[in-house]
Length: 496
Image 1: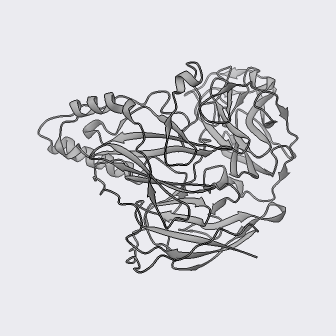
Image 2: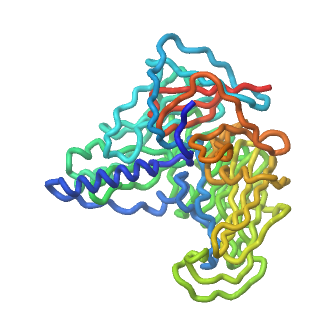
Image 3: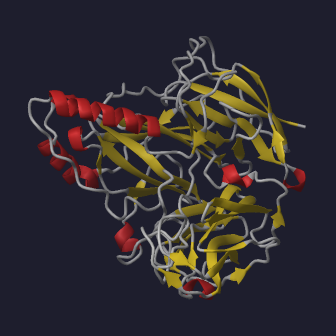
């Protein structure tokens, strides 16, 4: 069974695509008969709440460099990068019959290649476009395939309860991007770039009764590309019809920040905490008092059954700062920070009243301390504290919890990959893409967190996919996998 090399969190476009785009843009600069001008930089809103691994917004009352990079909220669709392997021809014939995934502890995946002719049609991708024309997501009642038409610049959701039978929903309202497209068309006039825009999901979350989608369009921008527009959000109760979210109106002109969803509701971290049951109406919460102390900060929150979890870093002992180069406060990047810090976790039932959790084996350090949390499913969350020392990475400690209040320190660093978004999040069961199986591993091993918080490797059988740039989503029948949103494989879980 062949798979791509290291998986990453769902990204608007992969690193490889970015390199290809840069190369193509450089070529365009050389041979174009007329120059094109670059598009505007991303807005502040477009850079928040993404799952691309870019630094997420944090709350920090001072300039002390204890920020938490790369803890952006993960969606359900990590990607696996290209291997150059050949995809076997799809099967033909009737669709298989799939029942719901087992409720017990998963032990294996049986792969089934879905026959052709039953999935949504996806328009061919312009090689100058930054990303694909389809993005799949999973939720407790099914799967969603967001199909982007680069020709008409429209976005249509296709839904399926089992990953086999698909139905088109109502086009999403994308009228707020009209001015960006108009400006893009006026500045990037080369006909080659006419269909060079693609849509990417930056966040997809399931709340108590609604879904929340965040996404943005990116267009090939010639010599200065890609071109970014501002991010937009929508909510839905059935994945077929989506209502735009007026972010400015919802939070009174504030920044809503990264969002996590679960059965307790949605929680977001902007300049403060925001919570919502519907995803449309938001209530202002509060930060833990310790976060408001100069030098302390909070990172991206998580929602699970029973409440909300907020990671952060607190000052243990104050010290002075000496001048240096740069500005990040880590090895070689800024002033020497002689204040002592340690990671912290807080739990809240409502996003307003917070209780600091008790953690065993919490390391402390001067300057570079990062605390992140990763939601595996609605009943499992993992926290990771990473120390950055002057000579590189220092100690790393992980904990796991089923309620967000009581934490068990893990014997191994399984959360090292978890905290870096190598998770396919599910409602009742999440999968971890483990890279620690062997040296020079070129493919992930699918694992789950079993009894005593240990990793359990799933045994795989059947016709596994051999495709580039996997998109993966967990739903009612198991793990749905695709490269382009039109050809699917299903990893059917087994238990016992």
